[in-house]
Length: 295
Image 1: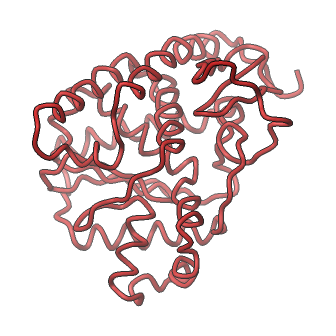
Image 2: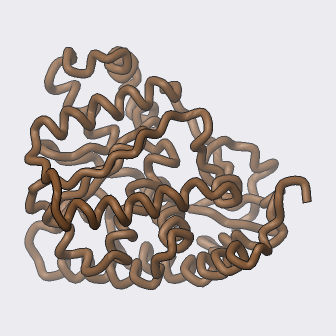
């Protein structure tokens, strides 16, 4: 079976039925030889942080952001975010989905936290180790829990795919990251600490840095499957991103979630392709038609 993921293609050695990630992102896409990479979709992925270092940085950066933010301690908004987020996390633990997409939970430390920050910006993020924050400005835009699941699935996917670890390597910021990973983030020069938090995916007083196009496509793709397997309606992903597109087209400064995560016709087209496959995969899983390893 040919399975395509993100902007790469690979063969599935395990599942004869689709966890059907058949999306055809490019014409004539051929599987890379072997498909042995450790990254999402078995692509090659260069990481510089160990699982322990990645978690330490995520925990420290999250605390830095919370300390500088007005955290909403309880109420319906907090309940909503935690309910949707916990369902997404439970879906992420489904073994066949992990194997097919090739994201890694085992070997990494995950202590999931979901907080709401009182801030009018339209944004959310997930730091390494499962540290999630949603700004209050996002909640009215995500009209229902399905649309909130679009955002949380996307942000959680970045963490599952270890994109921030990869981005630190690409930006050659690993020396500062390794220094901070020992528990010394707060002792870095403020400018270096701020850049590191941005690379990790955290945003608050500083604007986050964009993930690259490949990582964005991967996060969109993984997120669609996560929300579907969590029981949410993936059709709402198109609705949500179209709403964000309209917000941008009206002029003025786009919502931060679009600044960090560019939304365009290509993204929406890809999502439309993935939705039927996500639904088919969920049906196959629910009906017990997903093969176990070795079968």
